[in-house]
Length: 511
Image (cartoon, rainbow, N blue to C red; front, side):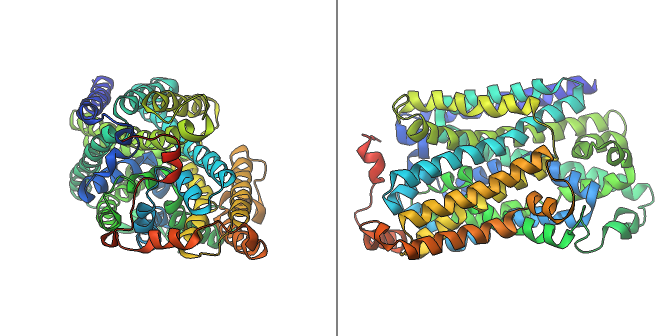
């Protein structure tokens, strides 16, 4: 019964995803619909959609697994995931929307008038997107395998097929409806079982809270491995500043009607994320009492799915576990959909330009390509904790797009040479750290800690290089900086003859 219940839950989520996406398909008619939903998404809808795509498998399964394995220090993950939107709200959201761009490379070209900087940004968008997609496919394989015994490739294939079908059908317009639906499904799936589990915990005599938080893993900054203080604060920097550099998050702000709506969207997102993150740590804490064997076997990411059957028995345990399986697959599907749209947009406009056109057919081909490589890699790459791998993607984003956006929006002296140098140095060092960490080339001491959590040194380095090279190369300052800065910061009510981004108009964009 258990396997069939879980398979039915996965089938329901997949069919519901395709069904809701069909609504968007009926509304998607233009290229603008596919890329930015014609910039007509209201703050509440957009906030739900952002919550849907942002709450990935790392949030639904990974946070609980980390709390089970390492304790309360791992609460820095949900704190960082949520607080990053405060930084985004203050520094980036409204000016980015006012830029009129479709993608991060569009913003880079609008602000710096440099095709070279645009190409560098395009490569980074694809790299970050693929690095973020990899754990989604691995997590799907883990979740389906845990519940049904299916091989890992089955879960990855299911997610890949459903995501491609949804994205190529309706683009951004379609997945906006899908992701908003999936946020509320995830919140329901993660919250309702907690009530039942806490009732059982109380009926079992409510074990001493010390059993849920023993002294050896309740110490501040204890974490895991060497140099815990460094690891904790570097992680927090990556999450705080990496949020503003995640392509699949930023592309959603281009769908708002104006900058004011973008700010309101961020404010609602913070509330939605805060509500969700109340629940995953409870699963990890209860897992210390009812599922300690998962810690010994290294299957900590499975605690959310396995805990109900340990605590509730049959048939309620299986039914509740199936509900959680539905929420987990909603997390994989929604995040993968957002990443696929952001990567496909860049592939069709920049990387494969000349072979694919910035059009609906070109976007659809690019969406297939955007999914294929990370899905294949997920089957051969060594599996790490889901949240840990996502943290590395945050570190790369924080080391590249964060300085580009902050300096590009707030410092008029940023030059083409400075931006390019910062992207190369920040992206190169952070990517090298990710590669060495994932391959296990360095495993001990401070070097291992610095590579595992590079943001503490890679982010300041990227900022320093951008500023220093910009000051040394004033002759590469882009033309027309003043009108661009006015456009980014002036309220829309002033009517500065806003329109679509110039690079897109030059490519014959029609909405």
